Image (cartoon, rainbow, N blue to C red; front, side):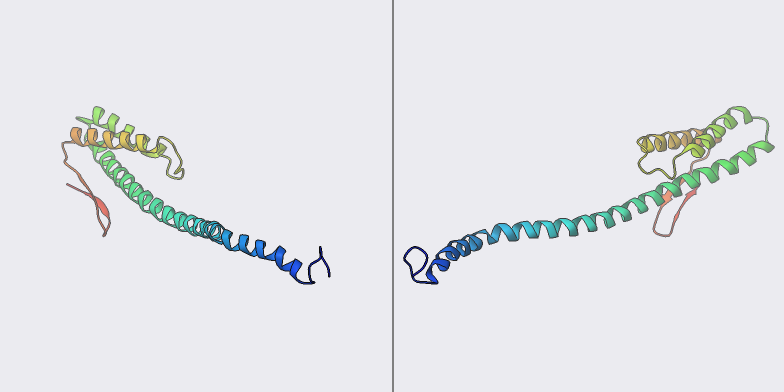
Length: 149
């Protein structure tokens, strides 16, 4: 006899049965925790990929828009240098637009006033178009982007 008067072998069964029962009862909790961890890792990975794609797409759109404004401004700057009659006010607004574009933080996506500065550039661009009496139409499409008049 061993273990408190019981036959040998029965004592260990009595200890393992409650533990096995507890292990079975805790399986859903364990699997839930493991599933959560696996899902979290997978979701984090996919979230980073999707975030990177989203950021690249919107960064490209903003860069294309700013590039069109810059090309427009440089072309008009060249044209206005040859016509000195109404140059002063137009050139002042044109130089302000070029300065805003040059100060735009292209390489800092975490810049907290990015959208505000972009709106200011758009407003200055509209002001310049009004002074120049042109009606541009900035288009974004799958083929590319650009200004048309």
